[in-house]
Length: 236
Image 1 (cartoon, helix red, strand yellow):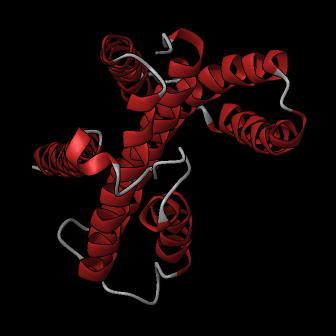
Image 2: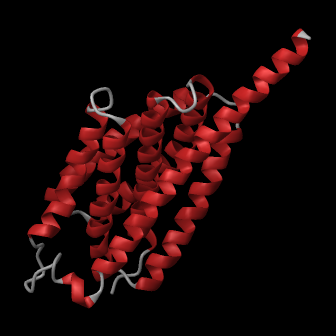
């Protein structure tokens, strides 16, 4: 009787974990779809002028779409305890829309064919690493610490290169970026799985953690895609 009870408990915990992870991925995919639609729409001739002016610079909306997402990510992170899950979800959806609008500018730099092929490669890489993170028995905690150190290094190097404008440094940053975000995908999926093992399904806290998990994976995928695009994208 006790053995049956333990088996039921383990089975229920596994089901809750799978449900939580599935919800995280569903929300991430929904955000990516919103971003994709926004990007393609604002890349059309009729909408491009709202983002890029006739001189080739950014319009007010263009600058908002570039800068505002940073503030929204910080709002979600720092407001995790303060705000409700519905509010955080709304912020996340607004964030994904603005990010999509900002991504529309890549259509002015790279060919549509190279964007599509790079997206496919990024999705395949992301999927493989996500599956690895979910199924591996190896603890990736130490790897995660190294990857976050690498991420900080990428941010600093990118800021420096913004002023230097070195094409070689740009190339090196992109290579390291691909490696970092590939590894972070596996690490973050494992972390999300571990969270799913511990939370109470359907609670307010679980919904907030689901949003945070979706945001984390969304950022992993978008950054992986952009780093790969810098390496493999064909310019117009």
